[in-house]
Amino acid sequence: MSKVNIAVIGAGSISEMHLRSYHNNPQVELYAICDLNEERARTKAEKYGIPRIYTDYRELLADSEIDAVSICTWNNSHAPISIAALEAGKHVLVEKPLCKTVDEALRVEAAVRNSGKTLQVGFVRRYASNTGIVKSFLDNGELGDIYYAKASCIRRLGNPGGWFSDIERSGGGPLIDLGVHVIDLCWYLMGRPKVKSVSGNTYRKLGNRANVRNLSYYKASDYDASHNDVEDLANAMIRFENGASLLVDVSFTLHAKEDEITVKLYGDKGGAELEPKLAIVTEKYDTILNLTPQVNNLSFDFVAGFQDEINYFIEVCQGKKETLSPVEDGVEMMKILCGIYESSERGEEIRF
Image 1 (cartoon, rainbow, N blue to C red):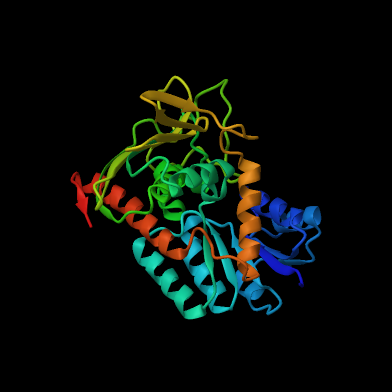
Image 2 (cartoon, rainbow, N blue to C red):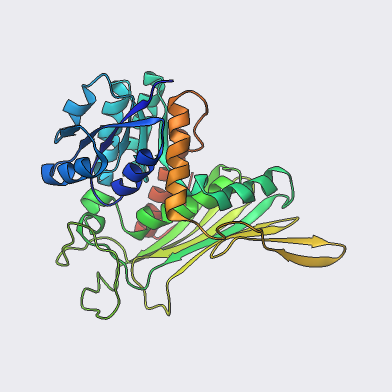
């Protein structure tokens, strides 16, 4: 079988994970790269031996030799580039979130239907090994019905600045950047139940805290400490039609003792923790047991997770598999995220 010709649109930080993973896949030909900053695109092209460089994604998409694209751009460009790529006959892997608004999400969904191509939303944690282990327990009924989940992704100091802190380009702060991962992971493992209502709060109290010294954190390539109009913290209670509920909180910055990531699921036969370390809780012979799987990584392996996601996407492009994160799920996640923002703004629960 001939190799899949891949183009990467956007040469910023997250593109490195896509480029490296494609480079490691023997079924892939890294065919082209595009970025508004030609020098940045050229640097990536030289590193990975990519022969074609573009600064306009429309020109890239006009090349009929390209089979699929990864979209690694600002959130506000996800929808228009995805739609253009689908209309050009390409399969699409778009970084999370799918877009900024529900209306945009619905337009992308319509483009997928009309194109006959696959759009895979970059919910990378769905493809992780620890997620697969928990899902196998769930699919075999070991944990019973999941009726409650809770997740946190707390950064003491971690507003990346740049486009991340510009609401016009990002659509929001930690909720849409970090919360999307842990909310989706819980929702996916809960069986993707239909959302009934959300009640959320967002806070802008601390800003980007650029004054803090002696503690390093990731900064966007276009970091600018002078601009920040996204939330510091968001929390929410999400209720589902099947009676289950999900409690979540996420932050870019918070007066917390330490960074924290937790993902926990509770069923009527057992429970599971994916973060900070994979564990299964069950009951046998009137005794509660904590089970620790013997696996390579008990928490999410960032590099391996992206490799698994990219490998899966290539098999989707080859017609061997159907994606684990279809556009429909991206639409539902945008409904949840936008509902939380709306709930906070209105100060009341949002019902669907």
